[in-house]
Each structure stands twice: as structure tokens, then as C-alpha cells.
Image 1 (cartoon, rainbow, N blue to C red):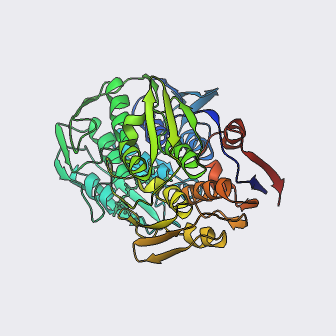
Image 2: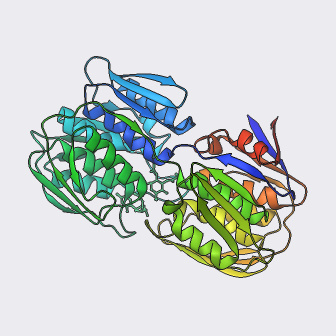
Image 3: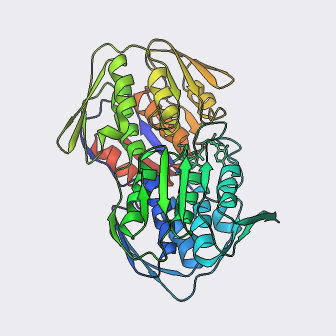
Length: 420
Ligand code: EPU
């Protein structure tokens, strides 16, 4: 195993190119199960999670070819309806093969993904939505066993205690494309990744209206065809690089990101004293000399993304003054606090809130990555901190940040790997 070493307290500069969105690519790749024709998907980030999804698709009967960031997925005989525990348990995103398998094969057996370090993460909304479409669902030995004679369109309210659900919306949306009649999903997730999935499904011949809104109307069709499609840029990767620049008071440029997917971050950064502007295909990040503490509360899109909460906290940890950070999507997503405090941060958790007493200076330390976004937060802290930070359990980062070391080095950071 390797650890990542960062020698911090150096400003970043230059340009970084943003990769395709992991969380758009995962359900879009799962959606290829809905057709027997080939699909060509461009701008797929090459990451541990996308590779896991491709492996899963192969076990389900697809054939996969990867050329650069383009993935071609074709039929390879009959589909298999069983998604095994070994793969699904490693990545929650793989649970979104349930909707496509069920609607295509009329049966599916998909391992329950389980909880993870960021919270309990139930699947009740996925099951509720599929039941409303007429599926019989049972849970046996850790698997969801779903079957139906025919799925039938329905009017479904999909909101939950914590708002809408990204992957539950994806599952029900995909299942409804081949169901008989009309489905309306109320309180659908409207994240750009869900909108991108709906656009891919429409390119395959689905009839979906309301993409990108909280109300999706789907008219079922008999069959879907193959499609050529390009994945949107990763707004969380872009937000992470923007926050690296903010925390190190650096002026950098991002190429290929989509700022309109990040307006809440831009707004919060403006309040804090960091100017973020879009110029054609470029995004420029320009921190002022004095930065002010600013609180955030996470919400479903277009609210502040929970997937940037940890990274924003690192930024606030090096901003003198008090800020309050609240996670309303995953109220337990605070594993990074203890690690940031090891670097000299002063953060106190109180339920779903974290009170950050920002300090001028953090100090490098050995720290442990606990999940993907917490690891990104430790990188931001490491870049801003004085001295050497060692990040252990690097594999979390490899799930979600393409060519991270190269991109950081390209921005002038001193980062390298060492064997544990
Ligand atoms: N929830 C339920 N019941 C359900 C489903 C979700 O109560 O059946 C709750 C969750 O526990 C949470 C809230 O609803 O409190 C929102 O969860 P959501 O279902 O939207 O999360 P997800 O679809 O499982 C995706 C991303 C996550 C991201 C969340 C929220 C993918 C593959 N994953 O997960 O991304 O945090 O949406 O935006 O798209 C990451 O990339 O690091 C990551 C964790």
C-alpha cells in the first residue's frame, strides 16, 4: 500500500483540466443494461469506481472496451440478473443496476450495498419506487429479490426524510423507461448527474420530460436503442480544486469544468472573499488577500453539495474566525474532523453541526483517509499546512479523483507517494 506525501505551505498556480463526472458515469453505464445495442460513452473518468461498474456489467453479461476515456459497452449473450455481493458491497453506486435489470429481465437479484462510513444509507426509497411500479420485492440473505410480470407506470412521491435521493431517482427513472404507460416521479432528485442520465436515456429513445427538475414524467417505450454520449464534467472534482486554491490563497485556472453546476459554492466563496469567474471554457479562481469565515449547510441540489462539505471545512479551518458547517444530507459525515484537528485545526462537532474556529496555520501530520471526500479535505489541509503531511489509506482517493497526483504536480504542489 502507498501513502501520499504533501509538502505544504506553497501557493498553487497554473491550470488543471477537470475530468468527467464519476456520479454521472456510474448510473449512465448501468443504463446500458436497458438495450441490446452498443453504447459509446465519452469523457468517462478512469477511476476505481468506474472500473468496478464495468466489472459488474461484465458479470451481468455485457462486453466492455475502454479506449482512453471512451467506453464501449455491447451485448455479450443473454443478461444475468444477479449482481453479486462482492462487487456491490464495494461501491454503493452499483445498486443502480437494480432498476434496469428489473425492467429489462422482469427479475433482478441485487446485493444490498450496506451502510458506510458517511452514514447508514438506507434503500427504502429505491424499494418504494419500484414497488409502486408493480414489482414484488423481498429481501433474502442480504439480497433484494425483485420480480414482476410487467412494470406499469405510476404516480410516485420519492421524497425522504433527508430530501430527494439521487440513486433512487436514477433507479426508478431507468425502470420506468420500459414500463407500460406513464410514470410521474415527484420530488425527484434534480442533481446535474440525474439530468445527464435522463439525457442519455432520451438519446437511447426514452421519453422523459422535466430533466433537471423535481418532477419527471416518463412515457414507457417498448425498446431502447444504443447511443453515443458524453458525460458532463465532474462538479465535485472542480469544486475540490477551487477549494484547494481558496485554502492556499492561490490564483488558478480550471479547464473544462461547468460553473453553472456550482453556483452555491461560487456564492459562498464570494462571501468569503474568493472570486470565481467563468471565461469561456475556463474557470478562474482569485482569492483576495483577506478571507472571511462563512458557514454552509448542505442540501440536495441546487443547495450546497454534501460531497464538498469536508473540503469546505478544510478551507474554513485555515480561515481565522468562527464558521458553522451543517450537513443536512448526511448528518454523520464528519470523520474528517478528528484528522483535521490532528493537524492543528480547532473544530468541534455538535450533532449535525461542526463549529470551526479557524486558525492562521495548520501543521503537517500523519493522517488517515476515511472516505473519498474526507480524503480530499485532508489534501486541501495538507497543501495549506506547514511541513509534511502523510495521507494513509490512499485507495479512497483513487475511487473518485482521476490522475490526482499528476494534476496536483501540474499546479506546482509538492506531492509524491511512498510505500507504507
Ligand atoms: N436516503 C434514504 N433512503 C433511500 C435513499 C437515500 O433515506 O432509499 C437518504 C440518505 O441516507 C441520505 C439522503 O437520502 O441522507 C440522500 O442520499 P442519496 O440517495 O441522494 O445518496 P446516493 O444516491 O446514495 C449519491 C452520490 C453520493 C452523494 C449523494 C448525495 C453516487 C454514486 N453517489 O449517493 O456521492 O453524496 O448522492 O448527493 O451518485 C461521493 O461521490 O463521494 C458520494 C458519496
